[in-house]
Image (tube, rainbow, N blue to C red):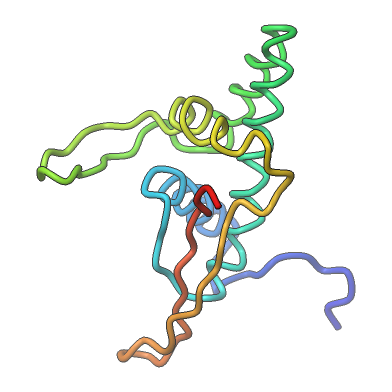
Length: 142
């Protein structure tokens, strides 16, 4: 029985699962949407929402006391990879600092939103192995 057992194993050992979640959350924050299996998307969604909430709280309390923002940035840096490589629309590859992008661009966008920063859209089955696919994206200004 799985009473009170939280999370999915995703057929991976602990280190591989943690690395997968960290990398996919970083990709979601940088690209603002990812296409993955539905099980992975359901696993990643609460982690991404908690990171955005951490960044919002760090920015709000950081305006009163700088130590709170530094603490929130350090917590985010311990839970996310340092950089991501992103290809822009012109085809140039640039290196993006994930924590800076989270605090400077994503968190201010959701200052008035109390939660629900992501949307999960089901896409159907993957042709190769019939896995349920989904798009996990950050919601826009609506």
